[in-house]
Image 1 (cartoon, one colour):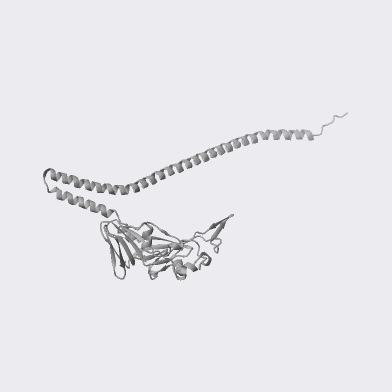
Image 2: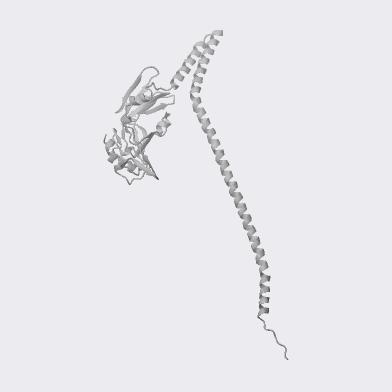
Length: 336
């Protein structure tokens, strides 16, 4: 790609744009100069003040409860239905070519979030990345969610990272030390979905919620089937079915227990950190109050001593004047 050779720290086409989240004008400038987004036509209609919309248009991968990985191409007027309690992997046609000095983040469109889809928040795409994304989507609802090829999927934002002091050598010098810039690995460019899946263990990757729902449904059916049989046999069937239902619920609890423990630990750590900060703040405040009291006492003491000194100075002044008169007077001689 053009980006591999051309767009480095050493020849940033817009060096005066400071390191920051790029606004829509700067996104357009870098798009025209570097071709940040390819594979989908760049449109001003898909720009927001500091982000750009990527469409669903592309390929979808998923695993059914039984069977191998499946794949479907979504383009034109086609749409895709994400099954309830399932996970799919979307690879939009948009090809990103990030210069060495620009990073990217992406988030799911808010209307898809409101419909019940879930995407990990704010994944970072490092500078130097080239290729298509593979985005996991979780449908946590009890209904199918349909998305069209031309519907917006994610919003991407671009951030210009801090410059190097020696861009030609890909290094920065601070103080007496020199630090080398870590480049994006060549073997992680232009990866396919199969490459991503292989790096994650090859799959199958599917939601466990669907299996739990099926287990609960089967338990309900067994309850209904055994419920029509009278006497001890019917009661036994209900007990077995309820046990299966409870076992399904227990499986769900086991899977979520780790998340709950992590959340509780975070809350506990936050409380301890807050208590520590409060104690430190109180200690500092008490010390400052003690110093203030000491200063006020010292000022009051000096003020009292200064006042008594000025009162005793006046008599001394009078005596001094009298003495001066005596010393300057001429004695009168008596007549002989």
